[in-house]
Image 1 (cartoon, rainbow, N blue to C red):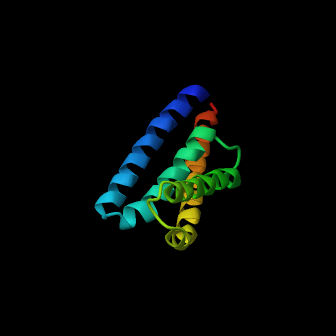
Image 2 (image 1 turned 90 degrees about the horizontal axis):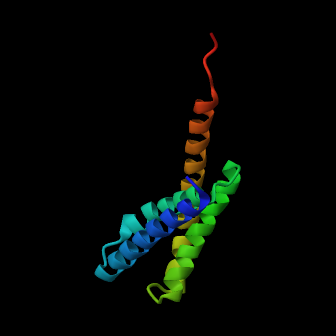
Length: 119
């Protein structure tokens, strides 16, 4: 898949996650979904789109994506700074985990494809 296609697909998934996130906040049922699943998904999405070369870079992209999401809630007025400061210690490591998981999954698939049987 080309870089341009990855970025377009990533933007579509990001728009879906943002829409679902704001909808969940508006209706008031967001606990586990917003604070646990979304950071992992955002981290994974960032790592998938930007394809970092190492697991630590992938974790960094994941944490950065989670941090950007926290700031977007603040800028949109959906949450206050105090709430986001309490969510950050949970969201940032989970975003890093999502990025790292995608990096590990991608490296094991490419390693498995490069192994050729001897015979």
